[in-house]
Amino acid sequence: MSRPVLGLAEPQLLVTDIRAACDFYAGTLGFAVVFTYGEPPFYAQVRRDEARLNLRWVRGPVFAPGFREREVDVLSATIAIDDPKALFLELQAAGAPFHQTLRTEPWGARTFIIRDPDGNLVAFAG
Image (cartoon, rainbow, N blue to C red):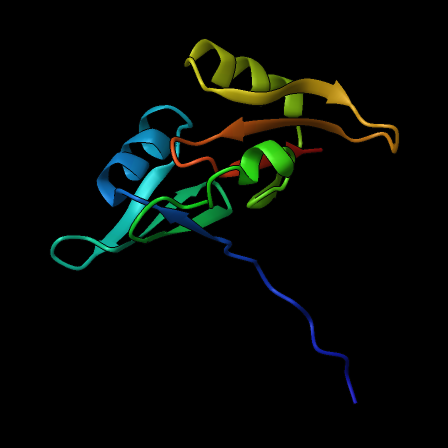
């Protein structure tokens, strides 16, 4: 019997405004909006290359008061990237809000973290 193989993961990020989130991911981070759903929209997907993020509207705020101060590095998603430095420089030029700038981790990965308007932290690692 063959072992099951996992496929592409599509993290779901909670947001308080679908349109604003789509504008941020498309306009600042270079993703394309694949779809929005509902009227008014309450669900969407953005994609850049093979990376996909699903955006789900919630009645805000996304995080409980004080959460980000207590848990400063809790990630909502991690996206693998073949050239972290090139993407970092691209997003830096686009004015992306960094939670953590490009660095080499103790285990050798090159990473940086973006903070979206709702406080979701998205890591890019290679």
